[in-house]
Image (cartoon, rainbow, N blue to C red):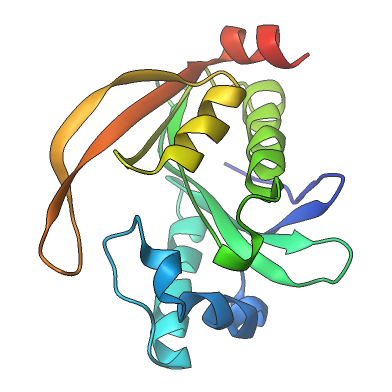
Amino acid sequence: MNFSDLHGKRVDLLKINLNGLEDMFEYSQKPEFYRYFEYKPHKTIDDTRKYLEKLIKITKADTGHYWFIRLKKTGKIIGTFGVVNIDNNRNSAEIGYGLSPDYWGQGYFGESLSIVLNYLFINLEFYRISAKTRFDNIPSFKALEKVGFKKEGVMRNFYLSANGKRYDAVLFSILRDEFLKNNQ
């Protein structure tokens, strides 16, 4: 599947590459970035390089694609947005995302989410998109629900955090018709 770069009002979503390594490392060192993730903060730029290379490898495969979220005004990379587990038979996929804590609560994730969903449903004709997030990630819930995602259920003890604790994941999804009805 061939994915395009995407452009919004305040952000551009650009195919990931090693040129964004330094900006990605900057936010990947922050402990608060990992509040809802299973991983530990990156200690070295090499940690970030290895992770970024993993995302690049997924992007080169047929089952996923990752973009950098880049601010139009400054050119700074502030996060990543991915489409993974693409099922061409079902026209479905899952989204995953991470945004620098320096930009939380400013609408950048919501803008990126709307841009990606619009592209997936209209340009690529996906039928169903899912997302899962930790049970206590209320800001993520609100952003997903704002564009029409519906809660499907709870995946018990799904996440295993870096400190060994287990957390439930909440599964959300949105169908093409729902998105078009709510966002056109």
